[in-house]
Image 1 (cartoon, rainbow, N blue to C red):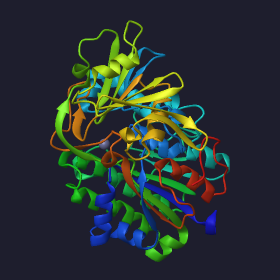
Image 2 (cartoon, protein in one colour):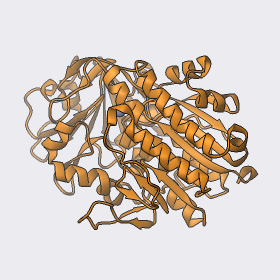
Image 3 (cartoon, rainbow, N blue to C red):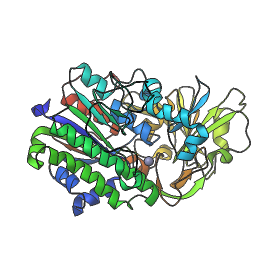
Image 4 (cartoon, rainbow, N blue to C red):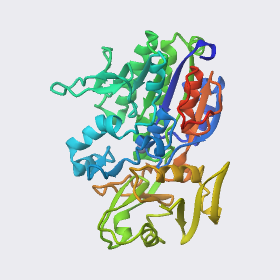
Length: 447
Ligand SMILES: [Zn+2]
């Protein structure tokens, strides 16, 4: 462990590089500005679809969806022949079955859906004898059973040794206020700050994964860049850790820290139904939410993926449509095709490579298609367009994310006291493991 320092990995959901850079420059986010003065900053790239459950799984495992197998906020479970909906909107949760959705989001995502071959930071570090802590992050799989604090619920969730999850699981009695009331005024980040202060005061971890979702929530409503007040609250949640350590100098002496976002956000001017854009076709199932969609071919479907993709030529729902054909992946955009596949030291392509000019697009598209839980077609909509969810809801007039586009995909990555140059969210887990001298999983690249 470099200099023997403990490590904090802080994730501010939906924070774009533009907003981060401006807040640091103007000093409107004092904790971030202090950390930036003492660290190294770069713009990084998320995964695809750039949606929170997918991205947080990439941050916690160092793998893209081909490894961690969480494909979207909403997807078709082929084994169980049912929809999985982690929470696109309250109405979508009701449409998918509220009880089932809550169990999927709280238990099944980690216990059953998260890939067996993926290794979480908590698993890798605790197997090496270290103590890990997680606050509110949805990818929490670890070795320690925690029983919910809700009377009558006895099913344990397996998390890190120190596990705090929206007042539902708490490995210690901290006195933190209940997390889930007063969402729009920042109750979740306030809960995280309380627990984080408690953990830092007691020196209770080697790694703390500190997830702050309230910025994304505000940005969905107000649009990207419109939520300065929410950013001030996320910043205060970081400031609480610095204060609990005894001040800025003491904090930097004790801790290395990485601060990042899971994905960006872009404005929504138009809400479109992907399902109606496909036209009248039998035997397909569409899952869509935010700015990403998937199309599953059911046994009754008589059209192949290529024919289905052509149906979306010129559709307002689709900027890029991706599918697999044999050993290759195909991207359709504006009626043109790009074929690609991994090759020694890069990619073999045929067609116009400029069709996939978004950040790390080939790598991210390939990994998303290689996820066995993904649909046969993946759809990335144009800028400004959001795909309506199961209940027809959208964030029209606000912000959203999920696509391959740069605005949804670029994230700020700040590291302080850490070796390595993480430039993708999948680089963060390898950098954290290397910090503690713990071996990386075979699928992960050193950064
Ligand atoms: Zn979001």
